[in-house]
Image 1 (cartoon, rainbow, N blue to C red):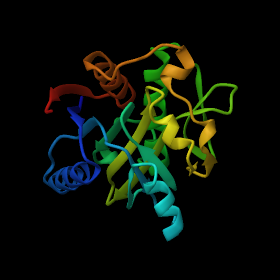
Image 2 (cartoon, one colour):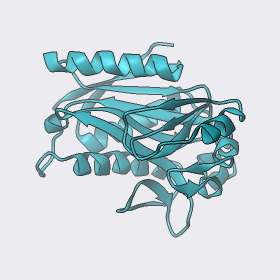
Image 3 (cartoon, helix red, strand yellow):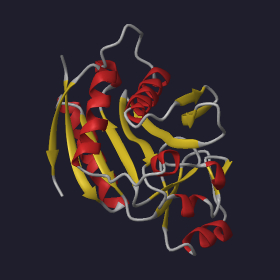
Length: 224
């Protein structure tokens, strides 16, 4: 069974996390083990390949107190910030244990399945939508997690974000995120009516969910 190294990094500036992803991405060509980064970012809006914001829009986004950056990931505009768990799997998707042929779509489905398994631990019923990557509350028009990856030569970077507390929602409400009005977004806190900390237990729960979905053992380390 393959092993994934899980690095819990605490709060990391987006650009610094991007540099770390690029470094690990390059090292994967030398056949190192897959790596899963778990972290939070200071407030930042990022746009993917499907979104080209105007200068006016960027200024509006920055007026919220968040930074802005154009990225190579798929998707449109999204937000990262405190109270949101961000997971960056950096791996060769051909190494994933699966009965299907390796494909980007299957990899995205595995990420969505990881999120759903993770959220089931908090008794939150979820679903996915074929036309919109991410995870939604079952039977409701509320989105709790987003997926946006970049793949080059079968290697992946970027990943998923899950709203844990209500803190990110005030930023979502300022604009259109992933092509949707910000008020459709929700969080674990909003769905359970209780505050959930991004602590060691939560990080282990996500790492375990990832491990089970991708059929990999995991080794978790803390590098704050």
